[in-house]
Length: 308
Image (cartoon, rainbow, N blue to C red):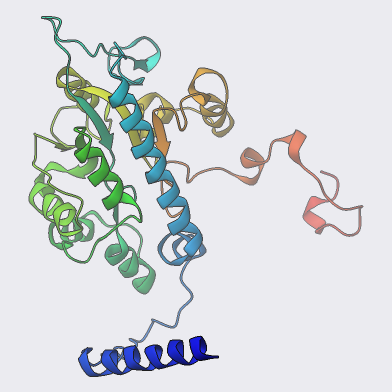
């Protein structure tokens, strides 16, 4: 009983201190017209759910654990496999040794959007306005989103752990190079920096390959031993996965079987993003091949399905 009284007394004392010292809680801003609209399910999951936060933290912890272990061993003569412009099959493993036989420093390479930064400000505008992607509006966000764009859960801690272990953090993003200043400012405002264009920040337009990242990866690999890569899209690992003409089933099979399947969690790390990406295509027939389909007995299924 005495212990319970002491606990209660302490709790009241702490509550009193908090009431006396804490700043007044600001009232929530009045909702704007349109705020009451349901957000798209993919946005609800990525930007608001505890499940998304947990999955991202889990991934970032695995990235840091893996890369730090590799760096401590310092035995790999080659980098993790990565997309390269001239590699056989589109993916190669550059040497971790310079021409003079000395070792290149270790680096981990990251996409930015929805991998390091959450574009909640821009995505809010899309959800609120109902508008589709517009390059001019995206550029405004990329230039001016610093302080609003939040870090992906787990990213700041993961990046800090990598840097403390002596691993260089490099950003490779498809934001345009004319947004370099705003992109670097957003990364740093989120606590994920430093980010310096053409030193550890590479963007679309830094070479002649457009949105394909293989050329930038090759440039990074010339100076660093890349021991880990992370992104939310397969193109963050190799351009071959997003090659024109690849059908949906073939793209999935390419990453889910064989040698590439062994890389997930073993040098390659995918950060969840169901809101947008190269995966956004496919008819019902393409997503569900014949061997995966089921329907109730005739009469229970929609009329359009009868006779299929």
